[in-house]
Image (cartoon, rainbow, N blue to C red; front, side):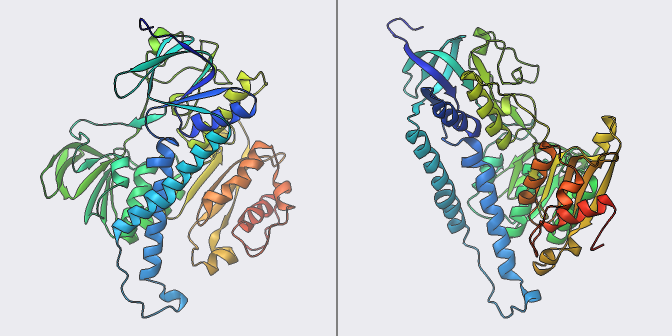
Length: 470
């Protein structure tokens, strides 16, 4: 503690106001705790400000542009060539989407009487931290309980320092114009989503992926549909490609990459690096606490998010597991409940994962291979969107829905969707997996017609041996 600095006492403090932090603050306040949130940059965090929300805005804009360019199949002809004003697109994304949502979060924190302290937090011990402001002044706080939700940041690779025309995903979302040529290094969900968005907006995109397959967290037959879509858009996907270095000038950037030892150069307007994210656990004084970190910089926690320092909890990207906002939401509620003495616990069996590519991909629970590896006897049942009336009327027939269920009792242990509305349809399957439902439960649930959701009932019928429309 700094001499002359009198520590202020607080009940529950939270470091970080991202998806995990602000949800933890609201839930803790609802449970009667007096809450103080420390945030150094964004209310709403990376996801809301420079991540999942603005990226979906650009994806939506790209879809609208493509629909305006070609709707001949619906009999809509003689449309004048649509012109994209990207400055207006970016303004809409920033002010009518992001600002509206961040303003909503700030309003909710205020409604729940959550104190927001601006600055960067540094730990002193298991019950003390100091918040430093931009003017080098600070305030020390003693807390009863602490939730750390500091999130993650993009990984920077050698030869590609984030500067100028070499950008991370944040920079990629805020380009001043749609590039004629864009190189994306890393074909994970962030890189693939933004590659598709910019291709729809008019860019020629090249994806350099270091492994044999883009989107490695999804099954190959799902990824194949995305690759087919990329091919139609003119996106070049180069796998087993190792990015070596970049050189830029006022007109563009040259990227050197190697495949099987053979080096190739490609020139682009911008290069966006999306090879992963690093947990924000360094340089915050955790070494002065009993909190234990892994070699990757993640923090070790129990099923409630509690660390080795029993009054410090950790949630979100800085604990093991997928870096997903909805996972952080759930962990936030568990940690806030644990502080209030509730018997809460994290259960990761039914966390869905979604990728907003064309088509959308979604998965929950186990794949067939994962289930068999776990010792389960399972089978799959599959229904194509080409057999769904609503998908046909939307002219969105590519893709399928697949159930993974046990052979003996028909218990649903997983599901995968590749096709229209996958991001919304997966929620029903998350409920099914979480509740231990069986295929008969879904088959006997009347789904409205004509809707995309009917594929769920159709696959359940097939699993029972009574397929209707295939």
